[in-house]
Structures are given as structure tokens and as C-alpha cells.
Image (tube, rainbow, N blue to C red; front, side, top):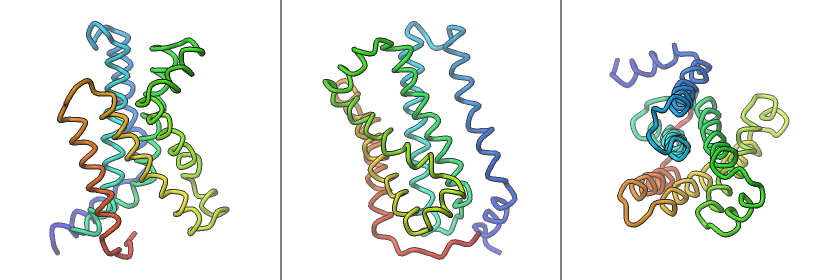
Length: 202
């Protein structure tokens, strides 16, 4: 038995629902730090930034699940739906912090969305992710049918690209980190387009 096979056997023993509990721990911790002065002199800005960065990191993990299976056989497919929902939670929390704690005034919110391109791009990513989160359940899969459901969930690709682009546009001046995130997203999207597909083993 190979190392990959042993790893997959171990992964099958982990219930996917445990990700919902594990995934919210950093979220709760970050809000606790913000409330108790643990995020520096600008806790709202820092909270907003960290939530957005965690959301992008988790979105990259979601994108990597299929290439990991196609390339080396590591099967994380059972965790993809739960991880996608946790990712949306962080994206939504990122947006709420900006909406409620950072801006707070409705007229300024709309002005920011319309006048600042990086906010427009970020909101577009959130809009694309919303139907994915709402349909990430067995009832939606049965009602839509597998073909239409999979077609809808391809919105993950432009949502991920727009999320990474939002980070690049948000950065002031030339910074490597946002560009690296964008590069990883583009690479993973390219791998998904070119790689032959394996049949998924549950």
C-alpha cells in the first residue's frame, strides 16, 4: 500500500462536517482579538484584512482539491462542499466588517462600490459565490440535476479570480504577496482546464 493510499484511507475516516466546527475557530478568535485590543491600533481594518486573506487562502485550497487528486491521487473531494461553505462564511464576514464596522453609512457604501474598482471587483466575487453557497446542499443537487449543478458551481473559477484580483487592486504600491495569490489562482485554474479527469473514489 502506497503512502497516498494510506493517506486517503485516513481522510475517509474524518467526517466532512467537522470542518464546520474547525473552520469557525479562527473567525471567533479574530473577533475576540478585535474586541480585546489584540489587533493593534486599527482593529477594524486589521480584522477586515485578515478575514479577507483567510477567505482567499481557503478558496485556493478549494481550487487545489481537484488538481491534487488528478496529479497525485490525494482525495479531498468529500471535504470540498464543507470547505466551500466555510470559505463563503469568511468572505461574508469580511464584507460585513467593511459594511457595518468600517463604512456604516449607506450612501457611502454605494459610493464606494461604484467609485472604487477594487470594491466593485470584490463585490462581484461575493455575488458569484452566493448562489454556490445557497445550492451547496443535497436538495439543490437533486432539484437541479448533477449536470446543471456542476455547471453552476463553475462560478467558483471567476469568483476566485476576482477575489485574488480584488486583493491585488487593494494593495498600495507594488507588493509581492497579492501578486503571488493571484498567480497561484491562475495556475490552479490553468491546471483544472488542462488536466485529464479521474473518476472520483468516495
